[in-house]
Image (cartoon, rainbow, N blue to C red; front, side, top):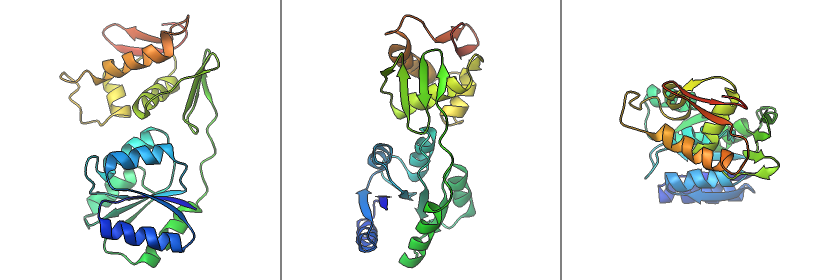
Length: 226
């Protein structure tokens, strides 16, 4: 079993590292949220042990972006907080289990065994629009047989557009589904426009037919025809 620990407390992460290795597991450690997210997205792990309080991105942010990237790796969250709100928030964001600190190592092992033996969701079929293919499980994108490299956020945005094929989606809908719902929808951030342009440069510009269309005054639509 291959485990990723995302924990900034050096003493605790070293204890977990040593203990899990003694159980015959392969273990990697990241001590910052951003580094942990990159490792989780890049590595094929059987489970992630994720602390809530981290420098950089906190555990909730890491989990949210992991799930937005269609990564289904089981996640066991650790927290020194005892409030029910934090546990509910983590589970709602896609955590598989929650373990408050301090905890017994035997309990952590039992919870890891439980979340890794749960039936995994059947791999999703490849989504297609014209000659564009998107595999949510493998996080792969191809157009006309050519592999296209996307960041986690670009992938999440494209997947949302593909799943809404031939349907006009507003900026507010995109923010709600791909970003936090806490953005100011009325003004301020142009993050949607920025990422739509990123996608267009990768998905549309190198090819003869455009798939991402702007519906003036409304939003965007992905399809062979506007």
